[in-house]
Image (tube, rainbow, N blue to C red; front, side):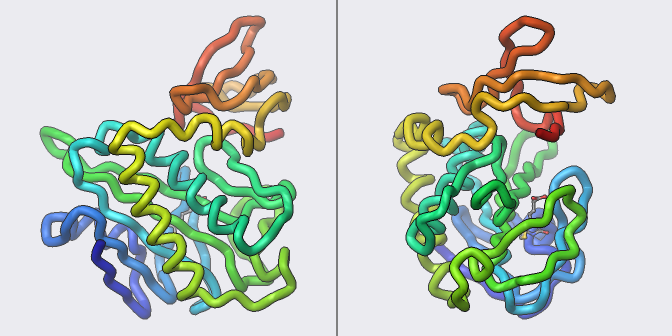
Length: 237
Ligand code: BTN
């Protein structure tokens, strides 16, 4: 496990995507502030300097490179586990990889792959709202932070070190074939919900059954049970 910290950087994900060749597998890159923080679907990830946790993790091990969906959801589950050490509120995973507290987003994950003729590495970018109390992110519902949920100032370094240790452990377990499905499905935010989703540009109403054993999302669409993998749709409850 290696750790590199920047006071200011454009984006820890961009840094690792551009410099993956000079870093080893399991390199963590964190920052106090990002000037071009990126979210999913081209959104901007804003931050107030030194308030929240922002980092990216480089994965180069062949055993994880083709496990995009599992890496993504196990990373979210890892953040959930650490958050549970701070709060006993209802903490859930919104498939494919957001973490929610009492229905409000507290963590977002941007998983990216770098490839030329073959897949070279994965970069797992994670942002957790720890001490922010105001948010500029472009999301439909107001997010939350651990400070807002607990009423306490959160020590970023302490939280970060718990996350790094647990991610290290959980990704090792994933390589060893551990199945996280039982744990993850207990914390499934979307389970049994009805949602409006955008499938290939068309807005449709679907019924969500929940996260499946292969970490895809099982839904009922046009009276048929089908599975979707991350990135295929965006939806609102
Ligand atoms: C989302 O919910 O849209 C994903 C947000 C991911 C933000 C993190 S912060 C660290 C890393 N660097 C980035 O530019 N983005 C990710």
